[in-house]
Image (tube, rainbow, N blue to C red; front, side, top):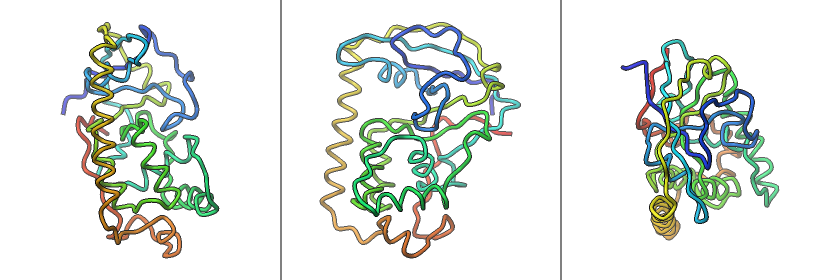
Length: 237
């Protein structure tokens, strides 16, 4: 596998020199530099209904980087959501949700700060809503796993360490026009929402978070859905 990969960062501005230590601590995987292997997705992420944006292009030498693939078969959907609930701000509506957050972190959490780079699902508005519904005992883990395949958002690639930043080289940028890419972004989200409502209408005898806690279920339980191996996966040492 090629150790030199091309990645893109969607933004409202041109970012020639990403700065280690900047960024919001409440992003999906904590503070880091969030990218994707897809230029088209980066352009969708760069725009809003009000503004154009840019797709910043970089090459990343991954040869000596320690990379965590959260979407690999080594992990389950609950590892991803445990990382998410540890970093993102969720609406905790019930005592069950409070206990669920603690249980997920304690039993499925992954120390993302021990890695140079993380790859995993991107919790856009739709995916975040699905995760929040699961945390609040509204959908089963099986429904959550199916929902995470909706929208075809692909993986995000997140640089976490100063060493990873040093392996990044800026290659230029492309313009992202809101009149094209916001339409694509909204269509993708609308389709995911439509299919999600179909999932909710189906009977589900799967595991809710309350069942997982009561049964003291761990990652090796065969009822926990495995991950679909990520698209555009980068190499690990």
